[in-house]
Image (cartoon, rainbow, N blue to C red):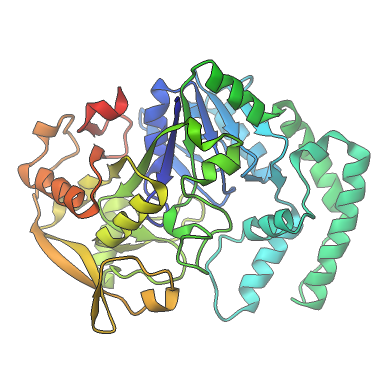
Length: 429
């Protein structure tokens, strides 16, 4: 079974882009299964930073074919801009990128509605304002525009004009916001349409054929487990399913084809946006960790909230994703610390709780129960094997394994492609 799924095991921003780029060395196909241009994957190769929002990170490996699956909501203008950046860096996408004909489009009125909704409410979720939620709303209310609609210009024209007028009524009457010009919206879409059409395909059929040929397929999600619309800190979540099960519905492959699931987690915890975060650090230490780790959103530039590693979350992510192993990133960020804390449980209303609560109101009352472990206070960025890691760093990793019940197969010790330590070769054979 040739499919490996890579999921975020926290609130996103775990470093999946670098991990997918690394694993793509032995993959034939890299497929993105959910989310939209609200996600940002940062990869550093030979000192050059590339930030990808829609195109899978595997595009940086010259031999891979990349797939944007039906579970993704596609912003065609963001895609065109991303293709321009890749081409300016000498990275060819011709013949290497496929876009599902069943993926839904993010339209200008989705972005307008997203921003208007966030501005109107007193209880903001903290969205990126990129129209992702409204696009998924249209998908599930069966009123969306799909990539395959780009193939028929006359039908597309009717849909865009009708839907823009409908959304204008919502913008004006509910949000008291400026309406969009339907004709201008149509012309903008027709102008970007030629950038998308060459890549349109039945990607489910393509993946089925690749699987039957024994090719190695890497399925990547955006965001993370705790932003999953079903299993995350609802309502402070995204509008799709980043968990491993989303790979099946977001790509059109069966669960029996999945061989392994890797969960990417930082050696500490971060999140962007609003909502509870039990291990969030006081501002002074949180700011230090933010500075050391460069913790600013790749898509929005927003500062990430920083906290200690949360083993309650790790166990939860292992359960709902069926994780085979954790891939641990940013271990080097902890090099500075004399003492490192790990959350092993919560105290909620005077009771010790070791399972992650489904209710966000309950989670907001959770107080972390910590164990303290000694830091290593040595540079780890030059380590390339387990024995080159400080003994206390190896002890820290073993503690995380014991608390989560899942082995750590790999650790990242810097942003560079080469800054990786493989701990368990059997997972990469």
